[in-house]
Image (cartoon, rainbow, N blue to C red):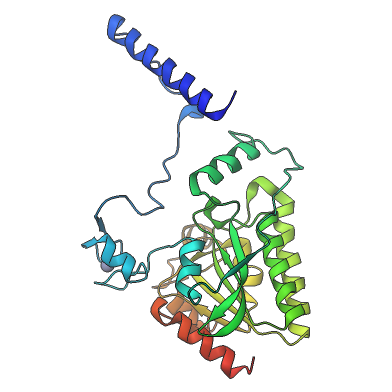
Length: 305
Ligand SMILES: [Zn+2]
């Protein structure tokens, strides 16, 4: 039975249920936990012409915000964006050649939580139109040729599964072979728990590839965006020769609430935000989204790449 058939049958069943309810007016049985669907709408930008900015809490015109690189024109709040939008913003027009788009994960653990992992993956692919949580390729930034890998927050919260790790590793190796500067845009909720150890393994694999790239004299520019957390922070994201961050991005290993509960102390103002991390030396520079292309091009020139 195809997907379309299934949904038709579902729709039919729902209509039948509705009719029965009307006739007998029996109340619906209470939902079990397995039937409760968690809404993902909070994380994404709500639909509509206007939206409320989380930074200044004012209503802003969506088109104006989008034309402004998805930054609030009132308060400079940087909205979260997907990998495709990021590539459009960063790369010179028509100069991006995607690589490693045929990688798929195998689910050797046969992982099942509320749903089997392959079902979740398929649903996510249908929802986003993307194959996985990272997009890589080569192209130009202000005329400088680079290898680029972008994590995609819209896909499984940008979690690092085996395909994300493999895409990044191949991009690093591609950059090393061709002596290209490497730019990685990180945004991630951390490891992908459905892949367990295979997900954690990506931390070591990507770090090892970066060490070889470094030995070969490569330039690695790591850009951290909101949020960069978990295994991504604990591996490649923090290994940049230069680490840039977008304003007010959440960057850390565990979230602030977990840390607060563990150490039972109040956290300093701006804890785990880009500006705080620049102050404490974890981040080299906080860069506004509109300046990112200039900054990357300048760094490549400084490094003589
Ligand atoms: Zn705002």
